[in-house]
Image 1 (cartoon, rainbow, N blue to C red):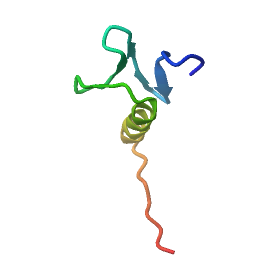
Image 2: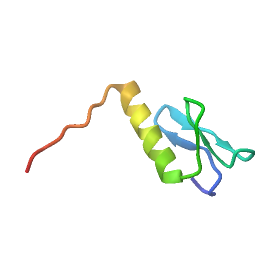
Image 3: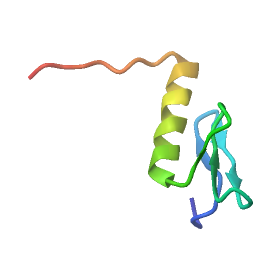
Length: 59
């Protein structure tokens, strides 16, 4: 992201920024104005597409 209103891309997933709604459009139709939440959502969707699972490691 070079400007605060750029699209967010992670792997094969791109969340489009809507200037009219002032946020990033989610696949379920929701809009989030928080770029960190949009980034995390894009990461989760990309991992779901690629089949990557998070592994919890107990210390």
